[in-house]
Image 1 (cartoon, rainbow, N blue to C red):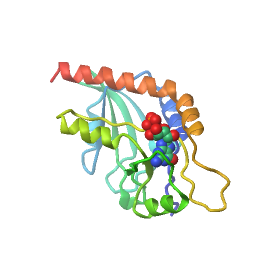
Image 2 (image 1 turned 90 degrees about the vertical axis):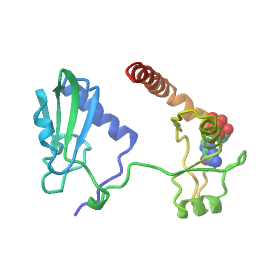
Image 3 (image 1 turned 30 degrees about the vertical axis):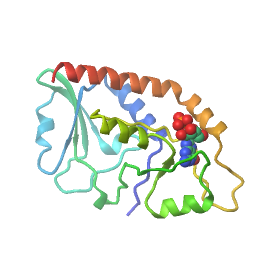
Amino acid sequence: NQTPECYSYEDCKATADWLLSQTDIRPLVGIVCGSGLGGLANMLKDQVVFNYKDIPNFPQSTVHGHAGRLVFGTLKGRPCICMQGRFHIYEGYPLQKGVYCVLGGPSFETIAECRMLHRMGADAVGMSTVHEAITARHCGMRVFALSLITNQAVMDYESKEKANHEEVLQTGKDRAMQLEQLVSTIVIRIEHSNNYA
Ligand SMILES: O=P(O)(O)O[C@H]1O[C@H](CO)[C@@H](O)[C@H]1O
Ligand SMILES: Nc1nc2[nH]cnc2c(=O)[nH]1
């Protein structure tokens, strides 16, 4: 069995760009259909269907009863996308999540600290965000936190790399447009869902 890969941002973008080029449908809602529930996708009208195996950088369904198809279409007139088949950790797929660990800063972690945090289950380390989230929750706000991963933690004593603020600023610059797009889209959707609450 081939071990499923972790997909990079560039891989996911290539997948998204490919899908966007294959259909004009721009889904408002995404539905992940589990065992026995793939029939929901058959309710979609004006379907555009892709087998997972034909989508670049896409995992494959291995579970009995999961068709392994991505179905675009409309449900009650609203553009939707259904995954006929999902992916599980038990299939060997890594969780697409990360544990963000916060330290006080302002210094970056030593190699020993990075190794320790990694062993403890941390995937990313920062010196902000958590404090803000805790304070905001304390004030009763709903919180959506977003962190740009700007640099690789240095784990190897032989490495010549060192975490540094210049790299952090450069990655921030490189991703600024995407972040601006993402955050403004999220803001629009928050207003939209509040209007309909
Ligand atoms: O400045 P922010 O956006 O918090 O981002 C990060 O950049 C600095 C480290 O390079 C730290 O301040 C860290 O929190
Ligand atoms: N603690 C910590 N915060 C960061 N913020 C941006 N990069 C880093 C990093 O490598 N470590």
